[in-house]
Amino acid sequence: MTRPYSIYCPVAHSLEVVGDRWTLLIIQYLLPGPQRFTDLIKRSNNITAKWLMLRLRKLEETGIVEHEKRQDRREVWYKLTQAGYDLRPVVEALAQWGLRYVMGPPLPGEMVHPESAVNIFKESLNNRGKKLAQPATWLLKFAPGGQFSLFFDGDRWSVNGASEKNPDVIVTTTPEMWATFLSARRSERGRLARALRIDGAPVSVREFLYTLGVRDGTAN
Image 1 (cartoon, rainbow, N blue to C red):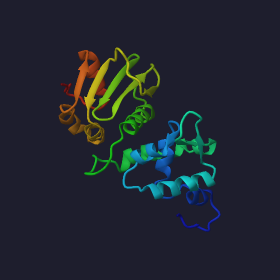
Image 2: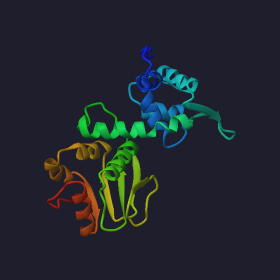
Image 3: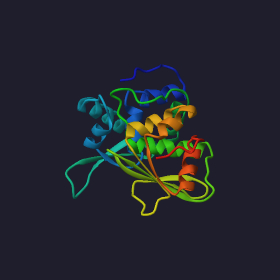
Image 4: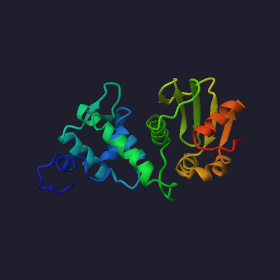
């Protein structure tokens, strides 16, 4: 557990609550909605059930997380309180800072969660003001990992876990390849784009690649 800093400072006091290893990641996993204990274990890597339970108990004690038993199910579900949801800007800011300064291609043994990768990508597009000429839908299909629809409504980007019937672009890849592609330097993305299966009308595919920093029109 985090030791007290013994400093009268809001940053120090906040870190005493959320500065433990895994704590902010657990909060990130709960931001989309309630999760079961088994869901949280699957999302994590190198954390034991004991340590996860200790983190959840501390988050409950500090009023950031609460649990409930649903009438139709035996499992316990964990969800954020309002104090927990108010940490969303902190988590998103850390994600953007990490993308800008410390992230590289996935290392051997690192888990790549498609949902997190897509949401970070969405936030990056919005924060950098990336826009298309008109509304569009990009469908990202991960094997394994499911599929996610990325929408542009003419102003902002959003993500939906459901599949759209007529997306403008369909990208089929692995979570690891997608993360490698996004974290690469722009000069390397043309080469890496060849490992992605990109389907759609040529003009839509070119717009997709251009938005992601590929200038040579590379596509499969």
